Image (cartoon, rainbow, N blue to C red; front, top):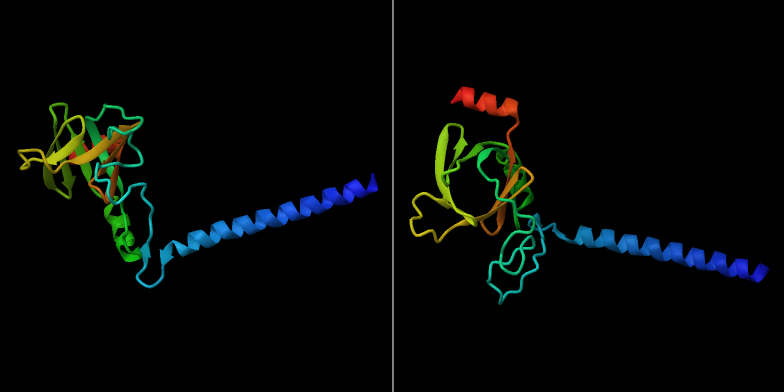
Amino acid sequence: MPGNSKKTICVKTIFKKNVLVALMLVFACFLCSCNPVDNTVVTTINKSIEDDSGYHPLTDERGVYLGQDKEVPGYYKRISISKEGATIEELEELLEEGKKGILVVKDDGTAYFDLDGEKTEYVFDKDNFYLCDDIERVNGFKYTWINGRLLITDGDTVTQYLNLTEEELEDYLDSN
């Protein structure tokens, strides 16, 4: 059986080389996703150009977010903002901006976002948040609540909020 062990060694060597080549190809694909000319990051969305049904990768065919819970009322801190097609400079600005502000969501279907004392008021239903002056409720922001995280999207921007801890809530309530 000495010939068999040479075949085994040869197969293992070829397999290892193929794995390395595959890993190098994956790495090259990641490098190619950044356009060095204008510093934009290319993202892929599973949506055809003809389809304008509002499909989002986290939704089912009816547009309902997968894993959606409805325990939305509460106090949330904004923890991140991500924007599709943003330049690196814009992403750096969003990183700082994304860590500011408190969203207060009430049981009565109203909410407000407090950013350094400036409040923007909203109303919400089971599917969307709307600015208070959107009486016809046509320009809503889709949202989902999953395990204490609230995700709100307006199409190309996703903002993520996290429930305040008890200490953070006390500090916020004391300051207002």
